[in-house]
Length: 71
Image (cartoon, rainbow, N blue to C red; front, side):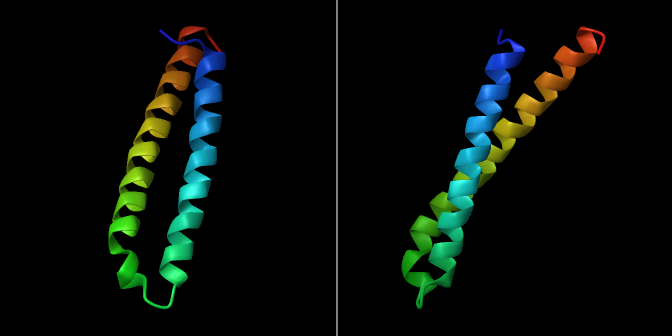
């Protein structure tokens, strides 16, 4: 089991990574020939989805911890 501090730090790291990946997607989509970067875009979008799911699960766990502790 993870404590609240560990979950909050993981969430912070994931949010930072999500921000960076979104910037990568913007960069590839702004290129003159974005189709040349199709595989990189696909990978970046899959990573966005995976990190988004992880972030949602962390948020759910944090909410559980708060409700369990009576906050």
